[in-house]
Length: 593
Image (cartoon, rainbow, N blue to C red; front, side):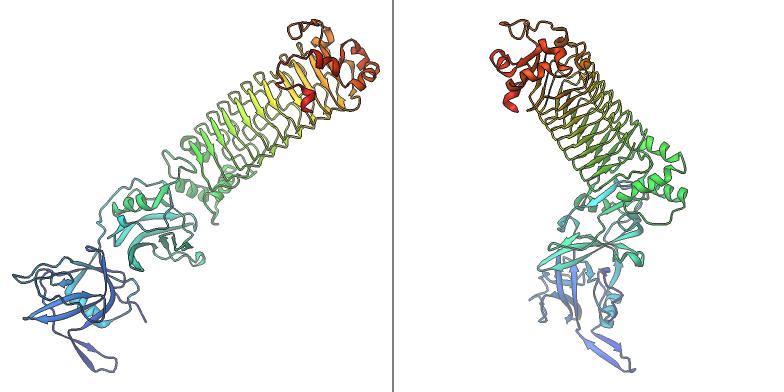
C-alpha cells in the first residue's frame, strides 16, 4: 500500500476544536461508509511524554469528543475526565477537566494510507516542525565530522522535523540539502532516526540512513563522515545532533580560512575531472593532479594546512609531491599510512613531529630539508629511501627498529641527531649518516654491510656490528669521536675505512678467519696507527691500543697482507681479557659475540 500523506509528519492538535461523531468515507465503488467513534492504528509517538501508542480512539461523552491513546485494541479510556493519563484531545477541555499533557504527535514514517486517519488529522491538527527553525551559523561549518555512535542518545528526543543546509558526504561524493529527524521503536525503547534528503544518486545505493550508525552490531550505513558546506543552516539542533553523535576529525587537515570541500571543488574545476574520489584517501590523488596544473593549490595549502592527522589515510601516493614546501604544516600523524611517496614532505620548514606507526616505506627525499623536524616514529618502516631525512638539522632521534635498509644519504647533515635505533637493519648505504656530528650512539647489531662514507664525519663514539661482514672504503672516515669498534664476523675492511678517526684506540676483529684489509691506509691517522698511549684506560700497560683478534689467529694477522703493517698493534684476545677496562661497551665484545 501507499504511505499516508502524514507518514513521518508531526502534527499539533488544535486546542478546542470539536470533532464529528461520525466520519463518512467514500468507497471506490461510489458508496459511502459511516464510522462512529473510530479507532486508528499507528503507532503514534508523543514526544512531550516520550510515549508511543499503538492506537488512538475517538469517544463521545456529554456532547464532547475525546481522543485517547491506547496500547491495545481495547481502548484505554480514563475512568473520569479528571484523569489525563492518556487524554490526547481536546487540548483545552471544558471547566473541571484536566488539560491534556500532550499537544503534539508524530505519525510513524511507515504509516500506510488511511483515509479515515487523514480525515481526523486534517480536522484536528496542523503539521508542524519540532525543530526550531531560523538562520543559524553552526560551529561545525567547514569541519569534518565522523559519526561515532552506534547507540541512540536520549538527548536527541523529541527531535522530529527537518534541518536544511548543504551537507556533503565524502563517502558517496554527494551533497544533500536536509537532514530529517524521525523516530523508530526497538523493543520498548524509542530512538531518533536521522536521514539525509533528498535521495542521492542511484549508483550509490545509499538510502540516506545516517544515524544510528549500527543497530545490534549490524552496520546500517557507510556514511561515516559529513562536511557542512554552507555557513548557515536552519536550526541550532544540528549542533546538538553532532555534539551527541559525532566527533570532529582533527583533520586530515586543520583548515583556517578555507573549507576542504571548496579545495576539492577547485581541484575538480581546474582539472576538469568529473570522477568521484573517496575522501580522504582519494584527496591525495586529486591534489597531485591539481598541482600539475596550477600554483593556486600551493598558495591555498600554505595558508591552511597545519596538521595532517587522520586514522584512515592508508597511503600517500608516489606522484607529484603533495605537501612539499607547505610552510604552515607542523605535525603529521597518520597511524594507518603504509607508505609515503617521493619528496612528499620536502622543504616543510615548520614541520616538527611525525608519527607514522604503520608506515613500511619512505620514498626518496620524503622529508628532505625539513629543518624544524625534531621527532620521528617509524617502528614498522622497513625501507628508508635515499635522502629521506637529508638536512633535517633539528632531528634528535629516530626510531627505525624494523628498518632493513637505510638508503643513500638518508640522514646526511642531520647535525642534531644523537641516537639511531636501526637494530634490524641489514644494509647501511652510502653517506647514510654522513656528517651527523652529534650522532654518538647507533644500534646496528644486525647490520651486514656498511657502504662507502656511511658514517663519514659522524660523531659516534663506539659501534658494535655483530653480523657485519663488509666494511666499505671510507665507511667511518673522519669520525673524530670514535674510540672503539667491535666487528664480530667481518670478512672485509676497505681502504680508508677508519682513516682520520683520530682517537680510535680499539678495533675488535673477532671473526673465525682472517679478515681482508684492503689497504694499509684503512686506519691512517688513528691512535692505533700512531701507537699513542691509552694509559687512561689501562694503567698497567700505558702503551696499549690496537687490534684485538682471536688467540688462534694472532700469528696469522701479524703476517697477513696489510695487517703486518700494524703488527706492533695486534693484540691477542687473551691479552685483552687480562687488561680490559670497560669504556663505552658495557659488556666486553667477546662476551656478546
